[in-house]
Structures are given as structure tokens and as C-alpha cells.
Image (cartoon, rainbow, N blue to C red; front, top):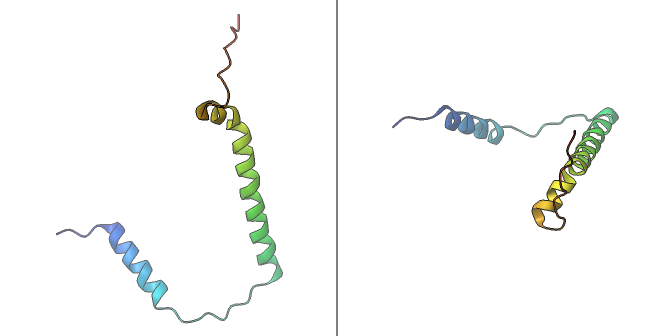
Length: 73
């Protein structure tokens, strides 16, 4: 029976997380703003992605019909 590296990595991570004591860490104001910026980037990124593929999504759901292609010549 061969143990895969992914299984070893998951077990190691679980042991490290489970064996830690409570951390008495200090979070300054910059940490909160960094988390807020990350959240804003995620929301804006999802919005841009949805805007780019909105028409394709509506065609896939059957809400809109596919537009005929125009010849470039």
C-alpha cells in the first residue's frame, strides 16, 4: 500500500493546526484595511467577470437568443 504525498501533506497540516496553542497576536489597523481591500477586489472582480460573460450566461439559461454574426467583409 502506497501513501500518496497529498495524503501526507493533509495529515501533516491537520496535525500542525490541531496541535497549536492559542495565539495572542496583535492585529493593527492596516490588517483590517488589507482584508477590506481584498474583499472589495473579490466583489469587483466577480462583477467584471459577470459583466464580461453576462450575454453568454443568459443564452445558456435560455433567457436570450443568440445574436446572428455579422460578416466582417
